[in-house]
Amino acid sequence: MMGRMLTHAALFLGLTASTVLPANQAEDLRTLYDVETYRLDLAVDPSSRTLTGTVAIEAKVVGPALSRLVLDLKPPLVVQSVTQLGKTIEPQDPLAGSPLAFEHKAASLSILMEDGKKRGDVVRVAVTCSSTVSMGIVLRVRTCLC
Image (cartoon, rainbow, N blue to C red; front, top):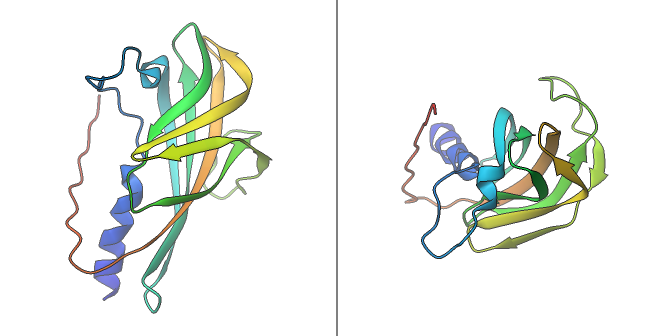
């Protein structure tokens, strides 16, 4: 049972900074930054079949400006909060900071940056999500070292 629950932890890996341009979107905001660090903190509750966790992301702005950070976040994940982190992401440090406004529609999470960022700035956010997992979910895990 625990092995299956840990397999479902890969659902959180669905939170990615993809650079594939959707056919129906003129400008893909995901091309304006380059993710340098991911940190994944998970809690699995087998009795309730619940997976909760936080993904911390550190990215460098590579476009001229960035006012929104757009990430892929596919259902069944539900976003509880998004936090702007105040310092570099370290393995054991708390993920503390100030709350950010966000919008989660379909498979896209759009995070409004408090202050617009310019080329070379570093953006640090923590996204807290949860999901109730059911048996029979098929996971496809892709790794891209681009």
